Length: 453
Image (spheres, one colour):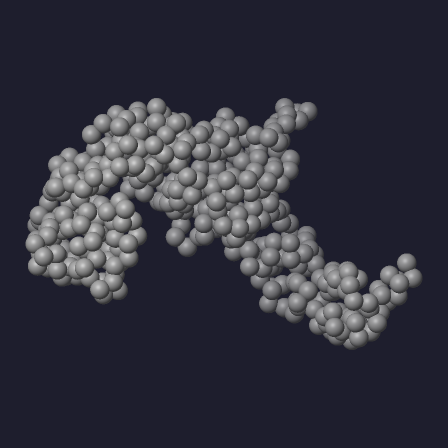
């Protein structure tokens, strides 16, 4: 089609199919993105060749989903999913078809897809458009619309409603009314979807340009109550003082602010969930003001359960929980240097940039606008100064270790760790004491005290 450039490698692959008398089409997200004017090199192909025939065409083919007609072709450094034209039926688990039949035409294959914008094909090598459901028109209108009957599409695959709201936040499209109305009646199907698949969609949402768009649609349709009831309960939890928004809108604004490519998934998740403990900790004080004492601790406990529910890695869970637990720090210029060093130790030097980011997102979401440019700058300068000087922020930074303690008569066992931790506390207060001679002297006195006690 005019204006669309077919990559030379795709033309090479098409020639291989053509020599065997087979058709091949570019399908899926790559085609959608091309019609949006975006480059795409994550290529999916559809063909009338059987998987066994595709395997014979190329030297390296991985049978990734061969029982459903899909193989992965490795060709000149690229990986391409190649699927035989097919139709699907008998969905019992809310996600995968129990029955797959091979189809004769690309049009029949496109009829099984989720949304019209994903049901467009380009014949290879020439790039002729096949668009039986006006997907190109919907892309131009910026509309997400199911192929055929939305209730049927969502009844086949319970992940599709979540994909719809995710695409809305990723692309800035609107969901067509009939498609949106079909989400709530299909929640029982979505409830069957594996936690890992839900997690993958959540990750894509929080990494989209405006995650709040998806979460508000989830709230409207019941998806939020189904999948993240802890977050749904934050609606109408009002906040006073410098807060303009209830806890849910505040959380979504923080997540929007954190949706930056350079920010980690842990920061994005922490931004979304950092105040999720407020409904549980809310109390009305004597002056009629709502308080949320220790909400960061309760939020951290809830988030650990939520992220475990969706099978996040331990690394992501631990980091997000730690950031949430520490996000309520309050810095004042009167902090002595030892207080700054203790802050660094408590947070962890490696976590400081992410904690700053979370605090910036939190501050942005309080009023819906960026905080002052020098926000956090006084603390950051103090921290940087402490890090640049001679310092001990962990046991490994001490000028002595357990072997040295044994050398002066400390018994191997728990007392080694106890003394080392006390020595660390000592040098946090006074870094000048972090020399081998001075630490051994202090350690001898500590050892005598413990032995006599």
